[in-house]
Structures are given as C-alpha cells and as structure tokens.
Image (cartoon, rainbow, N blue to C red; front, side, top):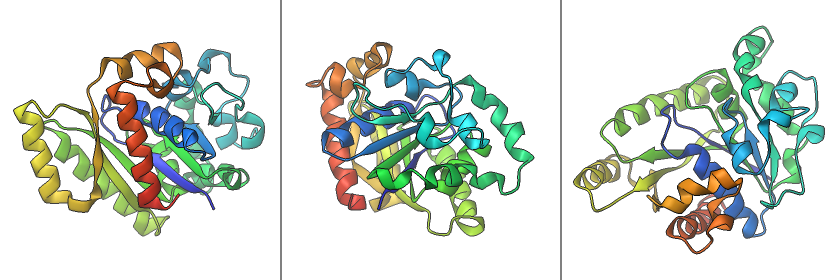
Length: 255
C-alpha cells in the first residue's frame, strides 16, 4: 500500500522543492517505486526532474479538473528513475476553477486514487502558500513532511502550518500525520542556526528528523541541469544527506 507524503511550507526559499526532487531520487535509488506530483505553479519540481514545463501537452491541472487521467498525464522513463505528474503556470487558474466544484478539496484525492497503488511512495510538492492546491495535497496525503530553514521567523511560520494541518485533520482528513520536520540549508557554524535548532528540539522533540540538509553549492546547481543532486554530484555532502534522509523516512514510515 502506497504512502502519500505532502512536502509543504507556506514560506518560500526553504528547500521544499529541492527536498521533494532529491528525496524522490533517493527513494527510487533504494528500489522504491516513486511518483512525484508537482502542484506548484512554478513547476520547479518538474524542471528539476528533467521535464520542460513549457512543452507539456497535459499537466496536473487537467487531472485536477477531470479533463485528463493521472495515468495518461504521468511522465515515465525519465533519467531520474522516478515518475512525475508535472505542473506548470497553468496551475495559477486552479484556485478559481476548483472553487466552483463540489468537494473541491478532494480533487487530487480522486485523481490519485487510480494510480497510487502503482507506487510505494507518492510525494507532492506544494506551493509556498496555504491555498486550495495545498489543501488538496493535505487532503490527499497520509502524512506531511515540513522542510524548515533554521532562521528567526521559522517557528512563527511553522505554528501557522501546524494549525492548518490540524484544521485539515478535523474537517476532511482525520488520519493525516506529521512525517517529520526537516532542517534544510543547515549550517551549525552559525549562532542563529544553533539557537533555532535548540528551540526546535525543545518544542517539537521527536517530530524533528535526525537528518539535516547542509548548505551545499552542488544542491543549488543541480536544478539547472534538470537533475537531482544525487545524480548531478552523487558524492557531494548534499547528495549524501538526502540519501540518509531517504533511509530515515523509510524507517519512520515503514516504507
């Protein structure tokens, strides 16, 4: 039975998409069948997986609106070794389009129902905002993985996100769980990182993943080559960290 995991944080620039792409690649390298769903209008997860978002005949928007099936929209046989349900700027129309539909928060749940059993893991890369697309992702998911940069406003934004998760649990998806909080762009040499890290440990305890993703230039370079860092620079510190993360997620969620 597949696990559906939403990667979300309403704050941009925290390594959310980078983590989605590299976790997908790392899980695939460990022989898990992986689908990456890109519901961010920026389409960066698609581009980072080697897909030209400007050349798509169909996207996840068509699937959400019932104008195409997930099976016929998923891009397979990619160099990255996982499948992608791609997205692009067309998703900016989703907010308005979905509001007019019955059970608008469940469109992605319906779309994935016919294909999720083909995969061990489905990862959903969400927009950096708490909009209808993010609500769809949380409604469709078994758990939430929260990438978080160790900075001053991190705790405030995280509290708002956890409140949203709780609302989703109360209203539409009672089984939604927190897979973990992932510290990204981690630099233990700075006093700010150490201070925020201590606050996170004190407040969230076991919810905090043991793995941290370091600041690493190869991680930043990889998307421009349409590859995860695990393939672009497989021996880099960033690549090694994502492989460790995949193993921790497998243990934590029994994948």
